[in-house]
Amino acid sequence: MAIEHSGGPAGASGASAISIKGLLKRYKAAGREDILALDRTDIELAEGEFVALVGPSGCGKSTLLKILAGIQPPSEGEALIKGERLTGPRPDVGVVLQSPVLFPWRTILKNVMLPVDVLRLDKRRYRSVALELLKLVQLEGFEGRYPRELSGGMQQRVAIARSLINDPSLLLMDEPFGALDAMTRERMNAELQRIWMERRKTVLLITHSIPEAVFLADRVLVMSPRPGRIIEDIRVDLERPRPMSIMGSADFARYVGHLRGLLHAEGGIDG
Amino acid sequence: MSKVKDTAISIAFFAFTMGAWELSTRAFNVPSYVLPPPSAIAMALYRGLSSGLYIRHLGFTLQATLTGFVLGSILGIVLGALVASYRYFEMLVYPYIIMFKSMPKVALAPLFVLWLGLGIWSKIVSAAILCFFPLMINTIAGLRSADEDRISLMKSLGASRFQIFLHLRLPSALPFIMAGLELAVVLSLIGTIVAEFVGARAGLGTLIQNMSSNMDGAGQFSVLVLLSAIGLTMNYAVRRLKKWVLFWDPSTRTDESGASI
Image (cartoon, rainbow over all chains, first blue to last red; front, side, top):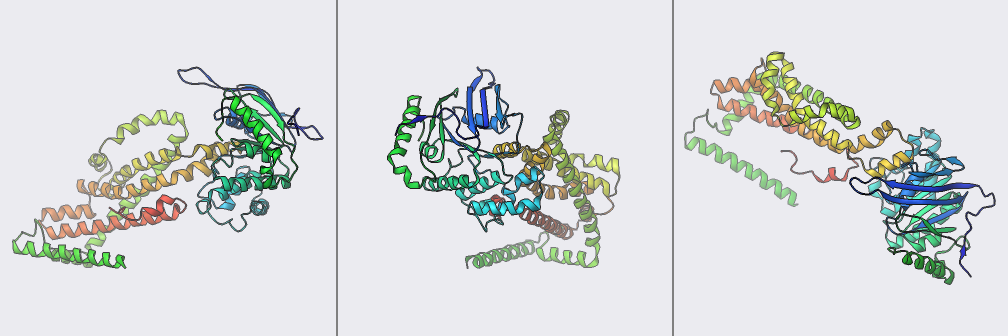
């Protein structure tokens, strides 16, 4: 099996969930030269596609995510979500960060309901949605607990449930399992695949872990060290659902090997 | 088991101290206006309480203290929130805050009595001024302590400034505000007593001054005992409130001991 360069997003409809054109981000640094975090990046994501973005530390991956989440404006270029130019945060974009970022004074249920409070949606209706999501992330019965009573992996599952509460069509995940131990991380990968297959969101997953990217994604984008550019776009042709054992297969190893080679050639990656 | 033992040792030590105090004042014939024996203090306390004299003065002091505490704290929290939320307001007000912060506020008590008279309002304002600063400073620090990732998350949800304040900044500030209240509750009593020293018609501070001029040592000590009892009770109440409000804050549940002084 040859490793295939993807010619862009997959999907019969061809509709772009995310379309990034010439996106550039420059940070002003006091007394020093400006830092170029992101250099004229173009990315296309099709509706329902799971795309992983890998790259060395500080290559601008998180900057890209913050721009897509509408928290930071780009310096140049534009990002379109479902064909609309992005001007700020959008309710149909869910975000999961590296740490669970739960609110310790809220119960698990109320943490999942946070977007409902902020977006002023119907609380009663969404309460049942929240309970359903807690079931989806296998935390049934924990709704009345507080975050400190949960392990790191459980807390991150709450964060995932929270990101899904208002049924966003696009999920942005920044190293969501980076803080977890290896065993928990693999289990969470399997869970995320299951959730994704059930919900079919468009996902952009930023990760340091090459196996995680290959295991989860339809396409893996590789970013260069700062200033970040996309240097490779690979389609992962492994059948779904992918069992955990696939990580031991020759095909899987070939993808991982190829990506690792690329990243090391570009100046290293941890992991 | 060792808890029972510790308590027993504490009680024994207390009894020993009191006994030693009692015996030495008697043995060395220490005049009562210098250091009265504990038995005389207990008697004075009993007489003062049963005659209703202490209760009347206590009522006055307590009213001034609690009113000052509540007003000063609310003002501190509100002003702190304004300073933390509006740059312009901060620029306007902060120089004055810095100036007043390092001033010993009890020194203002004579002015308050001059301006507001011998009644309760000079005591309330004196107590409130002392409460105001720790609350304002802590509220500012608390509102600014909100975690960056949580702010990012709120922003990604499109939360307004007010929503971020309500759902994130204010709860994040609560541990700071509660710590401020713990300080303020003690300060409010100090503020009241000092203003009573300067001039008042009633109150425990006035009572102490009268006793001092009558060389009533046992009486003064008995009022001091009463004042510590008030201080301890108020401190306990605030700590209960803190535990109730900050049930989610792990640091609250560990500092059970040693916070009462």
